[in-house]
Image (cartoon, rainbow, N blue to C red; front, side, top):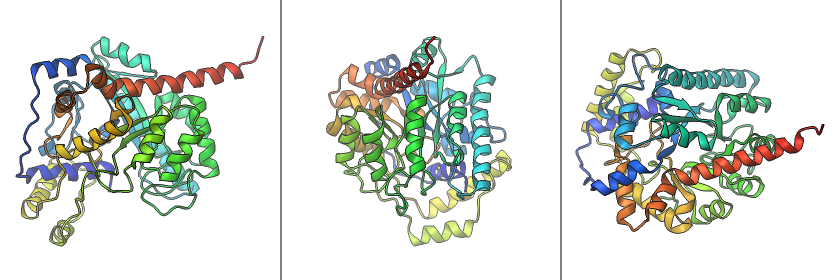
Length: 411
């Protein structure tokens, strides 16, 4: 199943959700602050939709109708100025053919991101540096960084990192749900006990190029080694606090502190917030429903029809869902552990994120309101929403520039 369908089916439960979370109050002052600060999300899986037939980034969609959570109108409604648009590749075989197919898929996804921006050049612009984000925002457009979730498409050819860097990739994670040639996953049995030898070279090359090292999905050993070996601060682009929910994808307090003490940033997601395991009855009903249509070949009508059938299952056997309160618990806990200068937001929109009361990017001002109610300053809010991440993007790029200068021949 594609990541797109995972996101669609996760969001489709909204058809049947009857619980209503109390809306977090957003005052005029809170909204004004939210609009004032530069707001970014570090993990937008929205490029999954760019190949979807009949779907447009500049038209407003509804999460309960088509499962999507990010588009230009909702970015405007939620005050989202931009972020890291993800090149995601589901893990496959560690073979020459597997690497080739993954490489081609990732390059095509990178092209789709660039084509979306080019098609709407009056609304979006590619960002390559930290300064680009502010400049693009002041010009009234949305900034589009690129990130690579799962470096499997690089195969064993690290020169491809430069290729993707030139397309605009400024953040990359070595691994996803399964171990690969670079590192161990947090959700797989360890084989490398951290980075592989090739993975250590991957880390050094990311530093050399100025690509942020993203440890979301990586094992605890990988996190520890990345903190120790990276020449610049690292990022967890979409992770959570293990103290709130004990899941292998989440980070314990000790590792939250390690990342922060090394100057890094932990960006809080809206998944893995509570036990959402399905009942046996629900599992059986979903199995009887059958396989979802292919998202890149099915018509929009076919996709919507399937989602409606899925909604009938959800109505009979409601899923367990986390809430906005659970998300805020993870965020506020992390803030207490590491301080507001080391926290960001990466909610995993269009990649499985979204909870009751926090369904799409139009809901982002609720976070600002809650942060202010909790006593955080305007400067803290600005740091959490974008300043912290842009600081370490700049650090990574400054280090790369210094290394390039040292390598340049004299005379």
